[in-house]
Image (tube, rainbow, N blue to C red; front, top):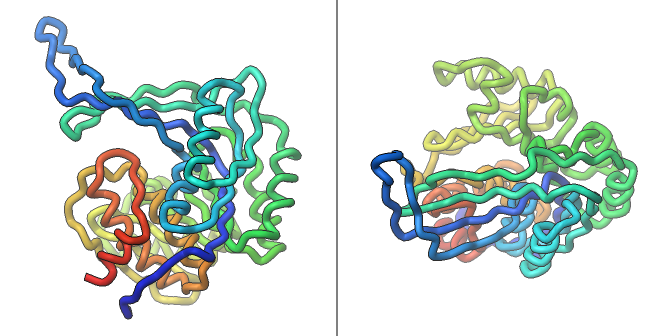
Length: 314
């Protein structure tokens, strides 16, 4: 594929999904209390950033795309922090605050480039006013070229089929990062982007390459998808499309420091590229390159357009 300088300045992407506040507590060193076998870490630095669907939006903004995010948060200080973080990186956030609810928050304690523990607050959003969410999506879709549904199984997308049907009527690309064992609710989407583990939960264990290829094509047909992209960590990613041969994108990097958030990077680059006018094949090629960059970073990190272009043109 021809190498070139790319930009996503004209990419208009709407993200809808589960918002999370990600907190990172960094320690230079930790030690063990031998009598209790308990790690003790002295925290030197704390970083907060948008997580879940917020990280998808952050990825899009960091590579130059224009992004709006719709979702729910709790009526609490964490929700206020999340809104400020999104505004700071120039993401327009049209959020619904749920009374008497907490914003889903995850705290990761890291030391020596290793995650010691993750602390989760609030398992799901208890949200029943789907009509309000639907109206926000309906009023926004006409201004965007691609819709990303970022499903972290936290309660925002409980009527996802209605959102898919709405976007299909408007001929908008629908990209979904799926969760759980019920992929039927995603039927009719333009693209699903499960990792290999998520894919195997649906189709069964794949012990050889041919099984992945056969089951991938079958799933595209069963769910009436335009395409399916299975991300496979050190083995790259494989694209399945109806009535086309599967395309495999080999991993550029065979080592990974941290794969946290790599799936968000993949779907963000594909969405931005499609919204710019690139083909799906080109978009997946760029996403594969982008994923190879972020897995070298620690934590849920993003990349910028300069990093992507540097590797594309090496």
